[in-house]
Image (cartoon, rainbow, N blue to C red; front, top):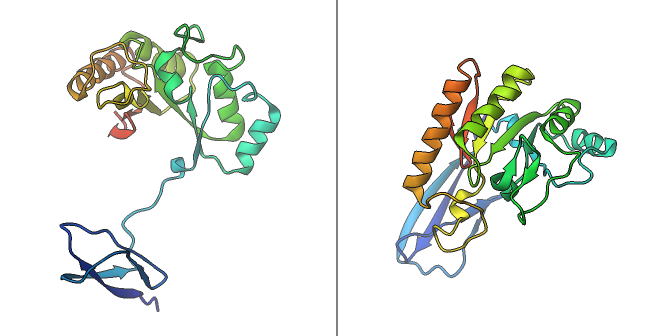
Length: 222
């Protein structure tokens, strides 16, 4: 008979909000002065969900000079990588997949690391590819052409497509590390990804993909 383990903790708070961590039966809290008391009950036998296999992934990079090494594929297999992201992080927003080049002065694209090279590695590893299309300097037509090439011309069956890397890092909120030639802000991003999505749907109606909006799942099986 399965018995559910329950633990009850008491947290003392003085501010409007306090976060406490309970680990191994011990309450971890610092600097709390008793004025308000909150009771927390943890049910270790209850599950809210299962972490998908695609969460065990590795971010690859188009500038990696060792990505095509046979040892790299073996290492990724041994690590249990179930997903591989391409063409990388911020380099995604300066990368032209059709020419395997980047915006001059922005990062680097290894001649041996184009999209087909990456797909060969993903197949060797047995990992699901996650492709980040160029939002920062690319166009909706380029993104749609990539989906069509991958899933119609080549028949790779790439399901996961991400629209841009950390676009919020384009100076919208102060810090700037992400390349973006488009208007800044959440509204502009929403408008532009709408164009990207519609272009994809028009160019490849038979492509069954999941679109990720700056890291958040936007549509499954669209």
